[in-house]
Length: 102
Length: 386
Image 1 (cartoon, each protein chain N blue to C red):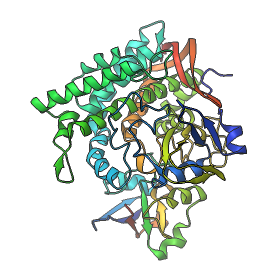
Image 2 (image 1 turned 90 degrees about the vertical axis):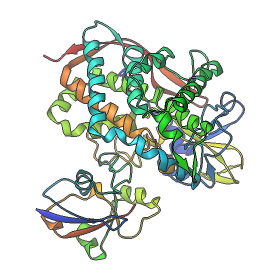
Image 3 (image 1 turned 90 degrees about the horizontal axis):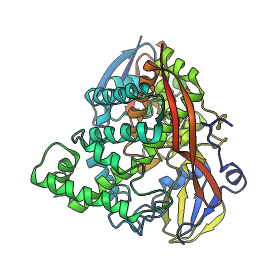
Image 4 (image 1 turned 120 degrees about the horizontal axis):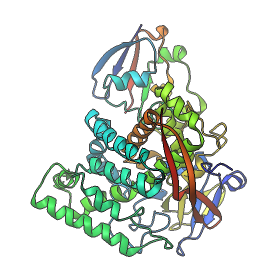
């Protein structure tokens, strides 16, 4: 079980736990504002944009080429940006804090 | 060649030059063909504007048949965003359980009816009623309204043999004017009333603005949805194993919907007007000329999609632009996705196989290119799942 914390743009903190699935699905299922997941998780809509804490970059890893191309045109993208649909949940993510980008 | 196969007519031009050329009513269009370029141009509203003369960014151009500006579609940021913010919650309603239940009932009834017939012409007897009835949910108007819209035929703007039909467009515009007047007199919970009571910049939306949103809603979701539904059924006829897969792995239907949208690209392209001299793929483009963002070509770009000409039902990474891209991505996408998802689930639950009897392809003439976008007609027999 991994507990993940989402912090929305209006500073609402939502703590949720899961064992599998993607970060996007977890956020959508729990009504995290700013994560829409319109395309259902195939990296085509960029409505699940999150910012990682700098220290988590190593754990989660960098975005793939295609994901980077998606993020490149998002106004709020920075070096800590990832798409939630491309982050698979596992035990290792326990304690992860994600800031919703939009 | 399979009947449900849709060729990529842009491949050679996309690889060799990156753009195509199309004359459209003496207002030529440079078609942007590569995925990366399409997305960049879609994002760059300063150089490639949507806020041109109403109708000009549509290909084929509608300047001669339309004076009303479609909203928020024919506006640029930041004004675009003010209107988009007003309409977005309304267009997200298809995510609500109640909406999905009603849509499921509608689609089940259509599929049940189809199963009783030896031959169903999918475009007119299946996809058109489905699209029209579903639109009553999006507009939150009486179910019986669909009969009127069905009577207009498959194209709101186009009719057989003519690219653009001014008379037909007037039927739609007059209808919307009339509905706006009715909503003003007797406000309800329908989309007309909701828009009429919405505010932008501290003032109510004007009738003309409300009309602009409605014209967009009617026109944008008409032949696109009809083609997506029809083409999906043609594919399932030739791939009964896909129905079997949806039964066994219902979790992939969402991905399958995205893949159908990518592969069929129901809207071939959308234009922009160039605001300053610029270039695309090292080719000079003059200010006040037109480009188009060719979604259909971008969606087959082998630099982005593995096996682009194959339908991979559970394609995991699928950054398609079938619903457009960036500021102007399709407002009706939530509704369209629900229609297709529920359609696939319903067909999987009730239909064992589909046989294609006869068909006539709908080929778009894009000057340099010929693109199959759907069918003018396709007769099939739906066989019940045993």
